[in-house]
Image (cartoon, rainbow, N blue to C red; front, side):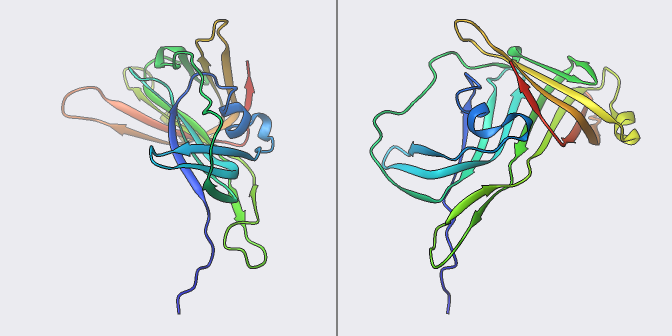
Length: 221
C-alpha cells in the first residue's frame, strides 16, 4: 500500500535585481557564511495568493549576460504553505541592474566575457519529526559557492589555472540605480578553477567556459 511519506513545500523563481540588500543579502546570499534567515514568502499565480511559511533560500544563482538585466535564480523550501491575504506586495521601484553595471575579475580583470554567473548552495534540508506530513523545521547546512564565466578566446585561456589547481581570487561588482548608487562587491578569495571547456566553431567566435568553486564569500558595499 502506498502511503504519504512527507511533503516539502517549496518555491522556485527568477527575478530582476534592483537593490541587493533588500532580499539577496538579507535572505539568500549571506556574507561570511552567516546563518540563513527564515522568512515568509508571499506569491501569486494570478488566481491564488499563497504564502511559503518559515522559508529559507536553498540556492541562489546570479546571472549576468551581455545585453540583459542581471537576474537571480532562486529556490526556497519552507515548513508550510497556505493561502493568505497580503496587505501589499513589496517591490523595489528602481531600474534593474544591467550587464553594463557589472565587473568581473578572475585573478585579474576580465573584460572579454559574454556571460558569467555566481551563486550559493545553502544546503537547506527539511526535518520531519513525529507524525506531521510537512517539515517540523528547515535547517541550512554548510554553504557552497560556485560560478562560471564564458569568455572569448581572443585573450589568454584560463586552462593553465585549471591545470595548476592554484587558489584564485575572484571578485565581482554590481552597481545599482538608487538615487545614491551603491556598488556591491562579492569576493571569493580562495576559489579553485574546476574546469575549462573550449568551443571551436567552424565559423564565428571561439569561446571558453570556466567553472569555479569556493569555500567562502565576503560581501561588501
